[in-house]
Length: 193
Image 1 (tube, rainbow, N blue to C red):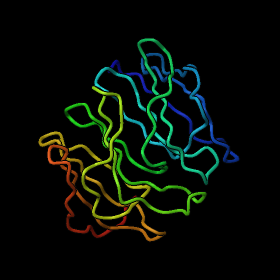
Image 2 (image 1 turned 30 degrees about the vertical axis):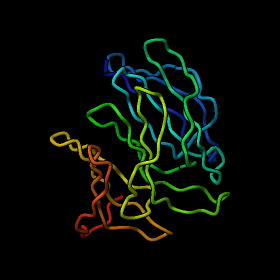
Image 3 (image 1 turned 180 degrees about the vertical axis):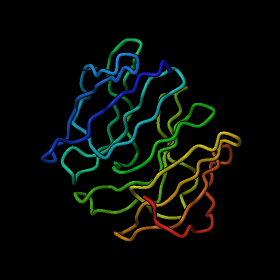
Image 4 (image 1 turned 60 degrees about the vertical axis):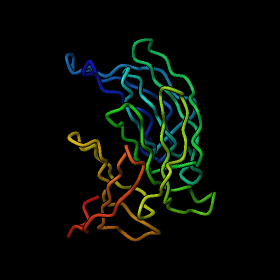
């Protein structure tokens, strides 16, 4: 909320996952260390909560095993703590904060160590209770590597692109948080993600 940017994990030039956290200060144009996550992560998702804490969700440390663990970065204290675990380990998922402050974690892949399956499920983080719970409905399509965008006028989440079982998707769907339901949309012409 103060304009700083958190960089969490990723991988180095040879593909090793990183656990480091850095903060970019746009006023100075410089990066500074912000500590480290509990485990190295790449292909993870992140979402900012209403109190400016950042959930760093799932991902993979080795490129094959999906993580169910969560780290929470608190910018006011400058600390990192572990959070509740996901119901399903996920990498290449999305995390989108809704207008009511909850976080929708949609799709992803369970990792090749678990049979490499793109997921047709979602989980909701409720900061009021500090827990994840499975969505009452499933997405229309299994997908990973997709994008998700909050539509601020109505609180719906537009989920687009990605892939399913190695095939690029040109489809989109909407998630309606107030109804905890998904609805398919028309396909788009070009695969963009």
